[in-house]
Length: 411
Ligand code: AMP
Ligand code: MG
Image 1: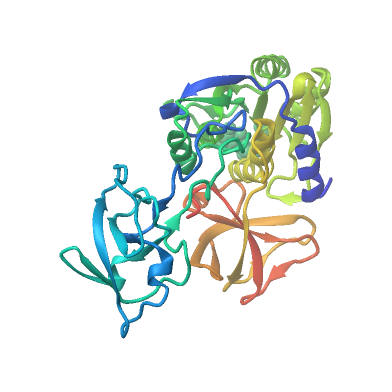
Image 2: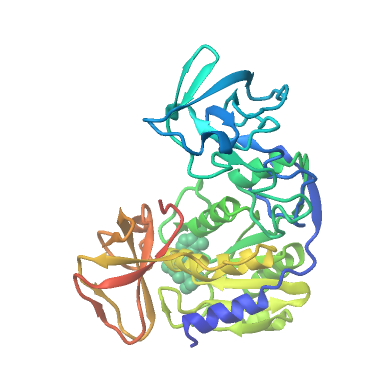
């Protein structure tokens, strides 16, 4: 049994972004993808000097001494609406009406915000001096200089990135082909959600939940079905999954029961088993193996909470790295206070599910109501965090600060 930290290190070392294919996708469909090259723009951002305010473009030297008692009078010679090119240039004693985002006219170096002025016809009074030359001017190239990397390779494309790509007129976006991740379930007791349950049977909820989490995280999720606890069918299903996918995640069949074949089959199929169990609760029997061409196999425990907790803690970071995403790959951890006692056996790093309340520096963790059994998927629903009790500690007392891992559904 190895520690959680060692397991994370082994998985991240093994999860190398090998053989990733690149495809060009239209900007409108690039959301959720991973940028495969860094993108540059031929334009500076801003493209030209422009105003950060509605106001007046002036020469700083003219208005440096302006104050309420000594307003400076200027002549407004032109107006520059957004989208137009300024006509003429500003000489001493002159100003141009300018709106936010409009191009600065030649001769002017500073914008005085409208609130610091009074105007009557073409006469303008500046009642307050700007603190320095260049005030409220967004200078060409001050956000980005043409030729430098605009967005770096490995970045996950979200809303802001789509906006930047659009602004750079990048109509076709180079992205890594989405990682193919197969999900397999094992167990004689499993049936599909739409089947009539016979005594002793349960629904294969792990497969659906894992497929949904994978799609949500931007991977190509492939349902590999559910196989019986029969050695040869399981071996065939695992082999098919490894052939078809970059990564296979199975659940069940990794404990020490009579029908728990996953680990030995990984050996037989030529995998290098790097992890056989981890000092984590829930999730101890997690199995991890590598195959040629950088393929990965995660054998998760069957208990539904164990499967999801280990998916969040170990699988997702590995998939992020394997798919070409740049770090950070790990989950996010926050510090929160617990108002209720939290217990652990002290032998394994315990993850207790619940919700996080509050904001900023004042976060509170509330454990889920009801049974904390790893078979109880019901109260994992609605959970937003997993409180961590480290090895060697058996208890977090009310008032203690604890580390909480954020999980999907987190605000
Ligand atoms: P196992 O790891 O195969 O011994 O399974 C441990 C527990 O998890 C058993 O109670 C199984 O019935 C349950 N389980 C295994 N696979 C699934 C699954 N795909 N969906 C829901 N529960 C499962
Ligand atoms: Mg089983």
